[in-house]
Length: 407
Image (cartoon, rainbow, N blue to C red):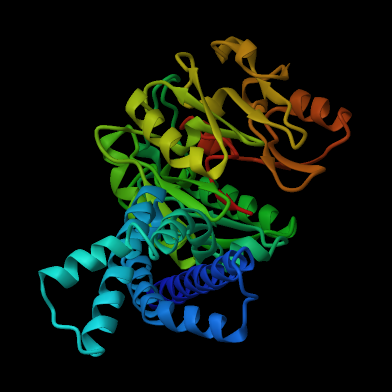
């Protein structure tokens, strides 16, 4: 937590400082250019005078934006806009009042009226600039600095995983018959899955174990990552909602900015399939319409388009379909409600062959229980790393369910 708050402090400081410096410089430039149209040539004295006039205003604006950023105003564009408007109005007003009273002018109704008049006059351009820059450039810069590790370490590949719970066999099943689960074999398969990710160049980070939460090994359902932003889900199954606590802590430790789905919305990460800037979201038993609406509102400012997909024949969207590195969606047609919704759809011959974890541009991870599907993907020119996850497949799990990938 300390490092997270430290990053937020630094990010808000940098964003506030740069916004104020840009606006301050813009004011000097605006008055300088304006003087070029006047009768006399601009001089250095003009630059100094303009800078001095806005100096106190800029200091106040910096403090206001710094505090606003630190308390979370830059987390959403609309709260950043509110912060920008408040700073744009308060900083020039307070700065002008302090300058006037320090020069001997009495604090009175006439002074307040005169100050309000400057907001429609000499201070108007300053206020407009702060209002415009804060929710746009300022918020963008804040997010870059707060998420420096994920923004600039482009070779960084992290996979969050969670060790199977002791009561794994009690996990929920919906669309298949319950089968006995071999807990010892499941542990061995999980170890092999984690090892496969590590050998493929991914740093594996364990989310704190939850030994009484049977489905907690399927960590993908608890969050969805979009660049340096993670959306904490609200699982559709009430028994799984406590799982998000550990995932949230792990994602915060990775330096990601966090958003969340709120009730009455529900969303399972297994229902979210990202293909480029398109986000397909399964509307089924675990994810409802309100959850999709909230996700759409959260990721649209990040440049993503959400497409809702009906799911009635499988637990999650990614039980039925996933995507290859080139964006081709693959799926087992008997459990895909509407394959025409996808731009490019390729059927695979086995139910367990629908899921791939994209490890790189030319390498994917697949279940060894779908040899024909593996052969099909290999024939498309991809390297396939196979893992045996049979015990998790008995609980409607697949290779994507067992990790959250951060790129």
